[in-house]
Length: 291
Image (cartoon, rainbow, N blue to C red; front, top):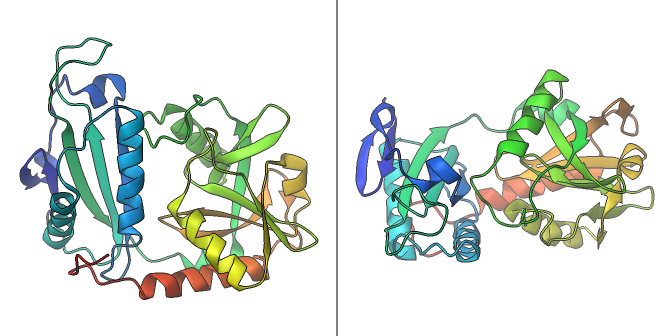
């Protein structure tokens, strides 16, 4: 079945979906985006993703393209037209179309694009074996808390990881402190069973999955420390994992050349993964607008 996209008021075949050459997202990366996970007919943490989109747009002084309710209806229609039960729903809002000029153009309409793509559920080999991480210098701008479409440093990091046969890149700032992954938040578990992750702020994106993990870890009785941690701490960790909307809680079993603990996914990581799956299964079905 051909994929369907939503582009500025119209549902069109994905292969024919286009934006104007002077769309400011295309020319300036002047926009924000969100990726919402669809899991077995449910949109996971939809409200929180839309809250974060609103925040990003506010930080960029871009007006919402429509009401929250209208956007949620379109999200459901895009999922329905693509017959997607498990996959990723992509939303992008840019400042709009205007003659090229660095300063904000007056009174233009924001542009909205949505696409949907089915993906398999969490790969068994990633659950059983974990993944490898490559550490790289963090060369991003100073507002990583905004989910901007300006992702060039992130894609360079992801490519560097792929060339090193790694799944993800964790970015490292001055002082050898890990900030986050190119498309994930970074976590370690210390020898004392303390769960450590970077605090929110301008240096990282406040992950939606990250937020859910806090509650789950506390239910399991684990202490959580929000603080910067070094590459050396990560090498010596009892466990390590990454989190994001597409792959939830992913065990990390190698960072650069350092094997983490015994090279197998840790017990807390696997428990958090299973709890997150149950959390998604309990979400409100896609047809509902209650969430």
